[in-house]
Image (cartoon, rainbow, N blue to C red; front, top):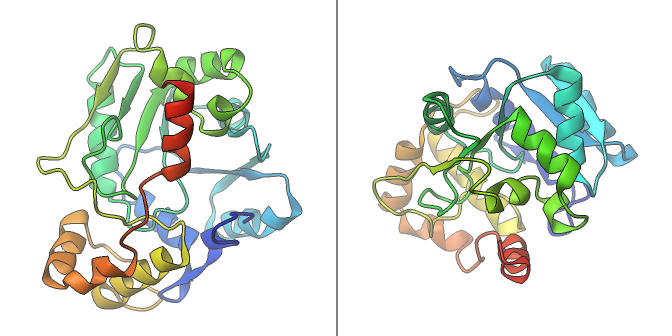
Length: 243
């Protein structure tokens, strides 16, 4: 809830419901996920997030705001899980089929980390990371203070020799498209997508291909939040740290 660029963004209204509610509904359509856990902070401002989790029948773990890696490890220690799937709450257009595809690739065996972001070929906002409990706990024990703990997976990603890795790529590079919510313009864009493809207050089933067709048919939609750099803060830190 303390996002600097868009305070309270995870509970901002989209089509009559909080953004996080939409993320949960989409995750519930994944066929390869057994349990959903919201990992939020102990800050009083995030009481509203915990309340939504309770109202939605979803487990919730509360931990550090700055040390997100430790928060993830704590959630896994409390609720279990050998395969961890990470998505973020500011991605209300995530596609369950893409999540399932990443998990499916991981389950083929031998991987410690599978994602669709190294490099990115999907629209920003459809990111998914899948990693082993072993890799997560090793990262929590060994990762350095600072960006490696704020972003959860950099320690795993930079240890390719230790954790076998795979990137899931889209047939066409769509990484220039921005479907995540970090800025007010992003929220405006997503609200328009929901207005045009869904019904207010209802679960929405549209896929990446549905959104893509809409955006390609209405080029003005992409103009709403164009010019915002993808994962700007992460990219700057990654360059500085040499990830």
